[in-house]
Picture 1: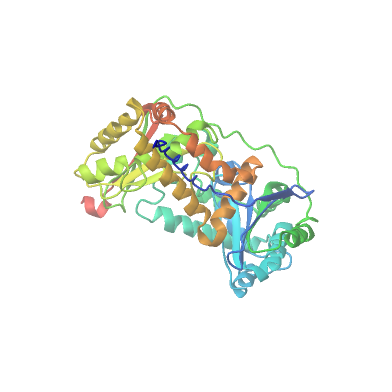
Picture 2: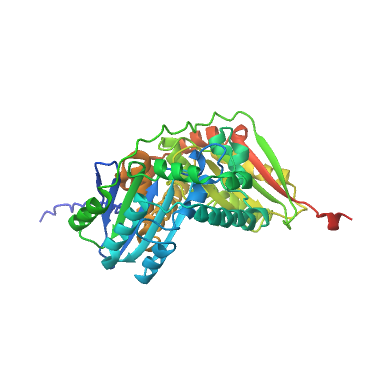
Length: 450
């Protein structure tokens, strides 16, 4: 009796990890308004965002802080909604709202029950059509912004460290290196004509993206968008300024005395690769390997092994995230330390950790862990704050690249990054010559010095 040898069944193929697949419905109105719809029926709510292509670094010269001042002006009333009525309208409908100024855009958003969506679209179109620009509103908001600068920066220990301070030291192009919050003299010098001109130029549909995320009927929303935003006139946009930065060839250092600080602080900033390049995606993984989480190499060395600091913070784009900017940027790491620890001792340890990335490719396990962390961080952002995180990336990618579908390709780009590319990126972009070192030194007051 013969026996046929058993043939082993083929091993099942490993299940492919599901990728992020955000629904994207993208179109433009005749007046140039870009519109992104992304349906999500998990809850009866919608997030509405309007992003204008004007931010900190492309505001007019001699008007530092103007982009931020204008963010406040947008809540001062419009053609059909008086002062503060926009805010009350959203709150009355059970919603939340906010606005912010970032490097490359100024945004406004609301999250409301779905049955209030049409009302919100009407309200956003109303203030895009006709902001109530008055001398009284301007003077009032100049005071508000001036107080904000005083509270958040001038009278705050470590005020502006490092998000406001680092760009001013690391960059050479005025657009990237000026005081984004604004010089108080510039803020006070803004005239009513300045404000009207700024609004007419930059707050136009041809310079904006409208994004809607949530539970809605797409065809119905398209009808509303065309009804309320379609009649708004297009405005020819001035050429955007050149915001490029030259390759840094020498390390920069700057110390900031701070009479309110109790401990010294140190930040290191390295110029990032250009947005969208393979090295740009590699830096997202370098960030995970070196800085993000208690398992990161810098945390392990500086905090766990050497005890030079209690924690370590930083990343790419301190005012947002890895993805929602378009221009020169620093990858930054910063910490607070005891006076008995010298900045040079900390820099020596940082250099030692960075050298390991530069000298040889990382191992497969480290790369896999970095990919998992980066992917998790991406999903966390997309799903954050009731749909706003998704709206933020869709609006940014439409605004910068005319390509909101980019959101669904981020994972693929991260998966393409190899150990060799990480090593190459570390050698070029984590060079000491590409670094800016910013320190904060507690400065004794006159009373203490006596």
